[in-house]
Amino acid sequence: MTEALHAESISKNFPTSRGPLEVLRDISLQLLRGESATVMGPSGSGKSTLLNILGALEPPTSGRVTLGGRDPASMSETELAAFRNRSVGFVFQDHHLLPQCSVLENVLIPTIAERKSHDVPEALSRARMLLDRVSLADRTDHRPAELSGGERQRAAIARALINRPTLLLADEPTGNLDRASAEAVAALLLDLHREENTILLVVTHSESLARHFTRCFELADGGLVEAREQ
Image (cartoon, rainbow, N blue to C red):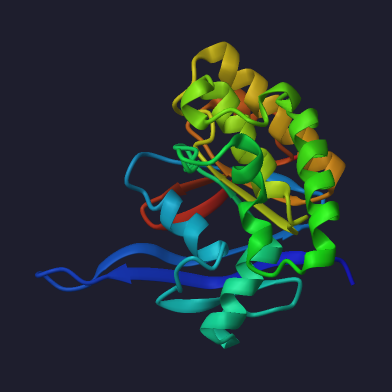
């Protein structure tokens, strides 16, 4: 069976002093492994909230999300943490690299939780391969502060892919970069998605970036509409 991301009738409300605030309303989508998609929409429309729900970082108020047939809502906290670590890779607008760790150590962080001693050589080999693939082979011992913004984001992409996730989520991954760096990071993200055969979903404000993706969704007034499918 083809691995897929399914969201069925997702809604999300947040409590306020005036009652529940509806951010997402009855959202459904399906993305198959190998597909890439963007979510566009105005600031405050709930794009990041949707990404967090799809990546099992927070639960929906109602509805259901499954990835490869597995339902995060049915998992214990331990199972959920392992599921996110193995099956989902995240790239954020702010790279979230640990400043005290080297680039290589940052990329290896997702492997630590479940790593056995005999897995160490394999993890190191994959980390070095990914860093070479994102053109950071000569920066493995550097700290994040010694890298440019584009280099830090490329390191974050390598870290997101280290555990071979099924789902790769990126929240405005080029938002803090100049145009040239943004285009380079976007191209790299798409190339690696194809090479690793992930499901790629990216939140972006960039229409030029969105044009390179298979599908494009627009989020507004709590609802999700598919704007384009190739």
